[in-house]
Image (tube, rainbow, N blue to C red; front, side, top):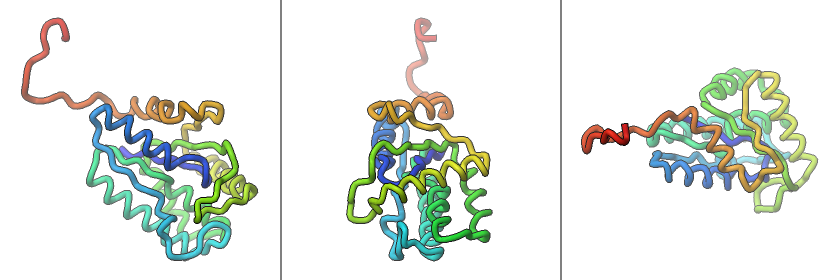
Length: 191
């Protein structure tokens, strides 16, 4: 299973990834995280991004997700290819990349959209311009609607509960935890 937190920069996706991973590990699930690959891009990002930069990010994201899927039953992604594509759109349309992004976006079992609750803080990398932050958020919403991809949208008023709300959205997709094949048989009282 693969889940991705989507949304503009500076909204708390990375924190949510760690919180959700911890909640799932407490339920004896094997979890692997795919960290935001844009942080490692050797090319310009943010408002100065280029098609080359976003292509690097897109392909690195896909490669990281493929690797993670072979390590764990659950993969949590700090962003999705859809987010990366929305940043790419700021540099101009890329018709040759869109089919790949649409196809790969369908591989997520669930997209969880994180809303803006405050302006982005300076972290040494991300753009702090609030207009740019909003523009990316709007582009993500527009793309989800145009491509008809469903997403769970977290409630901006429930920030303290986002991890628990995300877990509740995911649990129905996971099914029961595998019971041991060998060991004590269930007693009559537990059947």
